[in-house]
Structures are given as structure tokens and as C-alpha cells.
Image (cartoon, rainbow, N blue to C red; front, side):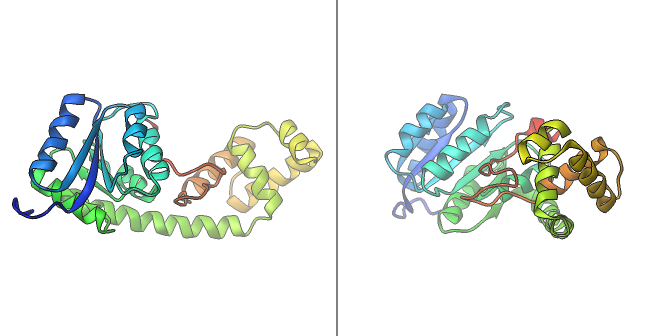
Length: 247
């Protein structure tokens, strides 16, 4: 456990909770337990951006099914605009797939909502030291999910590697819902050529028909996680999933 009389481990900690009073109370506890010399408490994206201006060593974000893109927006603001500030997610979700995707998005840790304050303190200290932390009894399930996703990723990479660059471009556009006619116009190809390439891609993936090719392609692209500080398979920055998209 964290001792009560030691010098503060960090200079500052940011606490994000949709309820301002809970955010402030959590921040106060962290200060009393000498986890940080200074804490920031916020419930909004605007407040988060303001707090980041003061410098933050580690952030804790409470994900209580906020809905929409709120969690993703907060994570992006802290992790990228905070120049790599470690982010610990406190979530009431027990879904190991969700937890695995959050960690692959670059979170420094994920712990259950019922995590005791003492354990949360230790998690924040570990995150500040560069460790990835999975709290609670879901650790085994999350690690197993991460291993399974790694296998899926390798298989997906192998299948995509067998396609030409042009075929991958066609597949990505098809997965985005772009019609064959518009794909042809965008890539300066004839619609007949695109249709032929879609059939060839389908044969490689073992499916037939544009809808099935698109569905199989989405599974392949989804198996390849985003890279921190870089781009995902569609050219966008990594963002944690919302639970809505996993249901």
C-alpha cells in the first residue's frame, strides 16, 4: 500500500469524471495520500484541455458509459495534446474485449469502477513509472484476449500482405461503403476493373459478393490495431472504442 507520510510521488495528477463533485473528491483523496503535490479535477473536454496547460504527470479518466465519443475525445486530448501523458481508465465495463481495445489504443492501464482508493493510488504510481496495469479479477481474461487479438492480427496481416496495394485500397474503400462507381472514379480505374478486382479479392478471402467481401475486409482491418502516435488502417489516429460500438 502507499504510505501516508512519504513525499508526493508525482508533481500533478488529472482526474476526469462526468460528475464534478466526484472528480474533486477523488483529486482531494489523492492529495491527502500524497500521490501528487497538485491535482486537477474536471468533468469536461474544455476543462481537460485547460488543465493540460499546467502540465500533468498522469491522468485518470472514469468511463461510466459516457456514451458518444466523450471517452475517445478525452483520451485523445490527454494522450496526444498532453504529449504522451499516461492515461488510466476506470471503467464499470467487465468486457475483456473492450479492455483489450482500450489498452491497445495506448491506455496505461484499466481498472474496475469498484477499485479501492489504495489500489488506484498504486495503479497511478505504476502508470507514472511506465508500467501497464490491468486491475481487478479481469486480468486473466484481458491478457487472454490480448493474446488472441495478436494471433488474429498476424493472420490478418498475412492475408492483407498477399493482396496488391491497389487491391488493399479498393478493399478499404469498399469497407467504408464507397460504391464501385465512385471507387473507380477515385482510383482512376474503370468500374469493370474494380468489379473484377473485388471478385478476385473475394476469392482470396473465400467469400463472394460485394457485401460479403466488405464484411470480411472489415474483420481484417479491425484485427489490426492503431499505432500510438501514428495512424490506423484508415489513416486516423488511435482512439479507444466506445462501449456502444461493441454492443
